[in-house]
Length: 105
Length: 317
Image 1 (tube, each protein chain N blue to C red):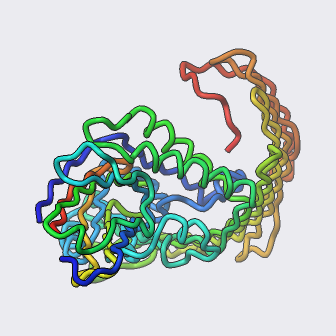
Image 2 (cartoon, chains in turn cyan, red):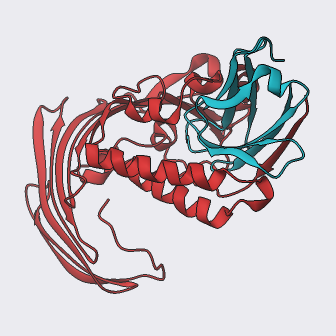
């Protein structure tokens, strides 16, 4: 996923005017790299990330009474496929939807 | 890449609809308020179940089902996901006309006559005071932190409480203007649908965040077709102003409503001062003085005690 030796930065955007929080970890480690709102999180040099897996948990609260749709965008700066978007919907107003996503570098 | 998803239920919201007083001259200020779902109000119906399609395909199915009777409510703007549209973007927007433009529709059959209603509602303008914005952002940040956990470790009670607080704050717009309109028709078949009622509402509200005062200006145009076609249609233009002050156990409201009977070229007005005092939970002392619409016997003077089983605080709204 990563290329070159630039820093890889991560930004997570919660769309549809909903509210979300994320936990970012390297897979199979207990160390939390960041939690909360994730904006321009420096993950490290691309070369250092090669072969590693990033596990991101994003919980989204349906806070928009106009829609039950939830959508999250993961943006990795300086990667070949920088943008990944997932969408789904909650069954009831006010539900929480959880994404657990593994990104392989 | 693997993806695992889990849906967790936190809470439900309930839809409510108020009654619609079309005929007579006993209109009150709360009856002029912009209804949540105008179509249902015009029908004097609170549908048992309302379909809420979230995409065009589901909408087409809902509209087809509507022909057999039922109710539907939808907001077209959100049929499409908005990945870059954040909570802050939405909250800062002063003119969320499209985001809040909601359509409602319903149909039912009574004897051999079919009734169908359609309505829309939107928020033309809104403004949150800087202090209110700050408080909303604080709650939003608290929710973000609560959500930044493993799904199995989420504190659902705390999230639910924060969500309720957020909803309470979001509803306290400092200034807003709302518009709604609805149409009700009846026919022996849908092909020969004729108007029975139609109406339009406009609501302008100012509510200072740090002071328990609420000032609302309301206007409503309503038309009821004479079913026998022997007389004339009822066409009213109502304009009202409400000023209310609310403390923990005490409500005071001054209401003025002017009704213009357009076909008869006449005016009525109602002026009332209403006070509620919660003596203890479930017991509320009520007093109302003023002048009603009627030209005779029009003095309003009501004093009484209301007993309730609910623990909710009495409110004038």
